[in-house]
Image 1: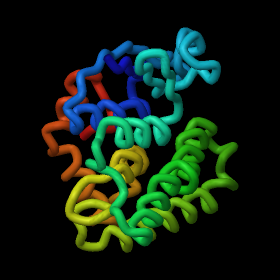
Image 2: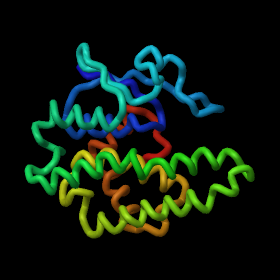
Image 3: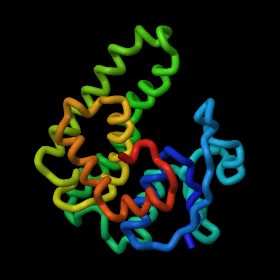
Length: 208
């Protein structure tokens, strides 16, 4: 059985959602952030040297990094469900969104999180951070357009990756100008598999 090392309020929630969509049995090993620092406990370093979540165990195999985990589960258990389209153009688009989520879109959101704790010391950084957030969210709003999900009418791998970025952005009040992205997050939150992942994973402050 797949074992999910699950940290509260983290990217591991996207893994629980995917496992529920795939209908796979799994075991949750829970970890709690430090209430003051919001950092993961040192016990996670016994699972993976970086001491971060998510990490999954599948037999003798350990997989870290949420993008790698999403790819692994879709490739080995999805039977093409949630995977890339069979054409080259669709495959490239799929790969773009999978990498964009953590490679580009998440960085300014994380900077906003860290700088929000610095008070006035972060003042000079805010205009650039806000500019980058608006740049990425405007791009996502335009690309989503009137589609249900980022690859079209059905959920695919990129949606599991992108929703956490948008949840975090919404927590900072950044989706008010982007109604299509806000509606997209609401659609995902309404999915039974997403709700099941929340119920099993425990309280999740980004989950609506």
